[in-house]
Length: 175
Image (cartoon, rainbow, N blue to C red; front, side, top):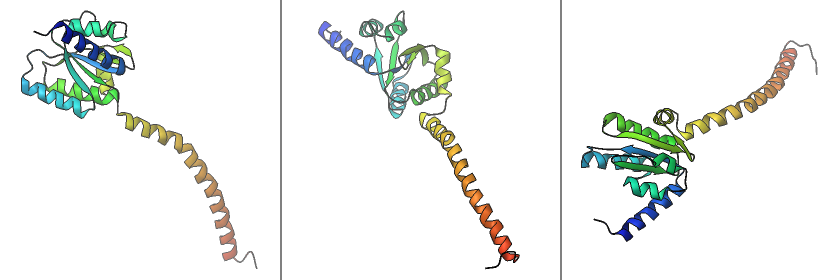
């Protein structure tokens, strides 16, 4: 049994993670074996996130006064939280893929960009393309009009040069 000082220290460390992480997913994991838990932790680390198994009362105290408090209120059963400061899509993809192969791992709630989301929204986020792909598409779309303008400008000069060349070849212009 942990001493009260250790519980306070754990709650403060959890509070710092909750405050520092704008994206988190809360899940239940009853009947998860040690091997499955190890695989889950490896999956979450691969997505660039952190993972903690928490007591509901400590989690609620740690989240007091934050947006996460609404999300953690009323949690029952075994609870774990996956945190990330990076891309929430990557973490959501990793967790939903894991949940599909291990039905004992279930989502309870989530928070993205500091806003509490429901389980359906977690699945919607997981179906989105990764951040890098979205940025690449956006840059392509921003760059496409400029490329078309340059092509049109170059095309006009090329067309004039082609007409002059054809006229020279037809001996319509003499030097």
